[in-house]
Amino acid sequence: MNTVLDILDLTELTVGEALLLLLSSVGLSLLITLVYMFTHRKSVIKPAVLMTIIILGPIAGVLFLVVGNNLARAVSLGGGIALIRFRSTLNDPRDLAYLLLSMVIGITCGSGLLTYAVLVTVVVSLVLIVAHLVHLDGARGRLMKLRIIIPENMDYYGVFDPILKEHCASFHLESVRSTEYGTLLELRFLVKINDPAKQKELIDAIRCRNGNLTISLSERAAEDYV
Image 1 (spheres, one colour):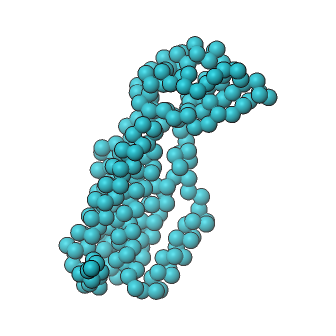
Image 2 (cartoon, rainbow, N blue to C red):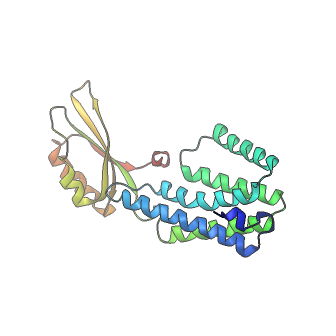
Image 3 (spheres, helix red, strand yellow):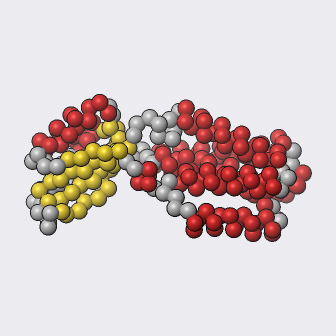
């Protein structure tokens, strides 16, 4: 069976053929993203994961076009990836994708393949802009951390679900731990509130259920999206 490599000569690709390969990788990445969103529709969807899936497709495509069978390029690329992995602390996967994209563009330009560099820059930039306009990157609605303190003898499983379903678009119990020498329990949820202006209503409703113990609601830090 013929493969794409048999049909196309990567050393003599036209602009249209290269653009077709990149757009194909974007389309397949978007398809995977839709599958991810569907399978996670009942839990909190992490925008960083969505954006990483979308970006890595065209980046991997241009990597294949640039490296090909050139051993020197492959070694230099591997060294660059190792540098990013071991010398940088990246808590957000989108950061790694942006760094990898920048490195790919640099290698492409250094190889004299300016057309490919322009194509991957334009295609990925358009994808990022469109994703931002449709709020796929998390611009609509913010993930927040909800911390609830309850008595140690309280059966906590599902007790706050009716309240969270009423006030939140999505929620997920991340962890449960004991505190105050085992006399109290701390529940940590990841939530996306329907209306940020009604945070006090959510807190008041929980307060009536947890015996007026401590409740905290805070913005989710960037490093927590991983």
